[in-house]
Image (cartoon, rainbow over all chains, first blue to last red):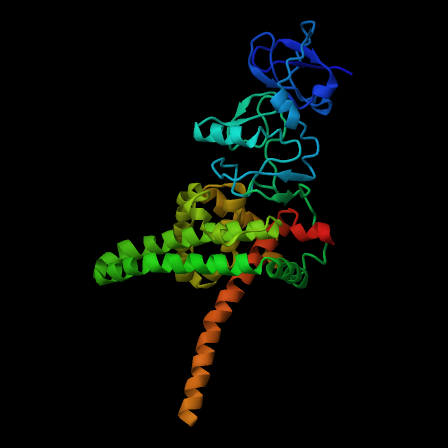
Length: 327
Length: 50
């Protein structure tokens, strides 16, 4: 059964055999590179239906050779290079992801372009999860690009059972992950904290030595080092929890792939610090409460790529909606 | 002798605390992450092993 779809560039109606689905081609009308959608995506692709479709078979061999990503749900062999910044540190491309070839995505990222949708060829923002033109999924939680390794695919959602949401269930699950990735989870954050301490200690000493100036230097320095640590260790924790086999060096993600989060995390740390301080000043309990739920904010920021205020809001709602469990 | 024993005891206890922090800290951090993923209905790697 032939596939009929519109060129996303010139909207020329095209038709090609369905065995070309997922492959790259050049539009015979405008010459732009396009991707042939899979039949199940035709409902999402733009179809004007105004013209008789033009037959074409300009499939590019080199893409056709590896163009079938229909098995992408199972396992994905990904290549090194973290220059593509997904929606969040943890966000990735997934099953319907239409991920262009990795080298091209890296090239696109480095050149300032966005993420190309493989369904329609449209350029999307790197932060987009769905293609703005055809609605195909670009990003998916649970998978991310990391090194040359097999990344196990996970379903998009998993509603935890009552047992899994008990303290015992959470601790048991955590222990399984912890013991499986012990080296990376322990040594990485430990080395990161050593590095941060080595750099920040002189700053703290100098700040304190300046007397009154300490108020201007030490709190921001604490917030910044906390932000560095929070991005690095959470990066490792998320990877471990999602079965992506973190390495010891992943804790230093804040210096490379996670650098985009440092500003927001720095502001978040200042916000949390100020709110906790005010809460302690008021009646102590609000400050303690905030300290108890602040971990939801840092993780929401990393997971959902929120700004500082958004992370506070998200973490607060998450905590209040699940108050008994999250505390 | 007693002083030496106390000194050794303090040294062991003093090294256990940071060692405990080195190992317990990541566990607690991971516990928070696991809880966050559970609260947001996201899957864990261990889910498909069970």
